[in-house]
Image (tube, rainbow, N blue to C red):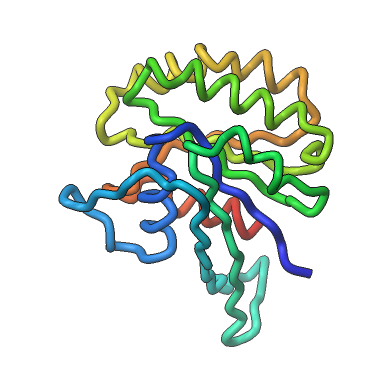
Length: 179
């Protein structure tokens, strides 16, 4: 059965650039730009596991997952895409924009309390780490009240720092998607 994954977050949080850099590694750099997604984008992420002694793999055992990015402009309509079949959610927050983090917190909380998403695994991606200074990560997590939140919700929340431009954290997101 195909796994369902949504990528959401406030507008201008970096969802499109991040998903593009995951789907097409090396295609995003400092000159790349995108426009606000009004609607959805569909990304197919391919993955070929590396065999190791603990997890042998068959030759050409290529896997893929389809990720639907929902534009931040249409946050009020995200509920139309929720279903019991949503297995994973990538929630993207721009750590270089502290003003946006409060908005991100409200959107994240609305996802976490949604009855249809109680079994979904959540990946909180702190993007634009190449623009932010290191302390902003801690400020973002503090503003989102993540430690308190983790104790109160049933979903498994994974936090990954990432940059679409430097590719920091992209491998961790791919690993999270396929585990």
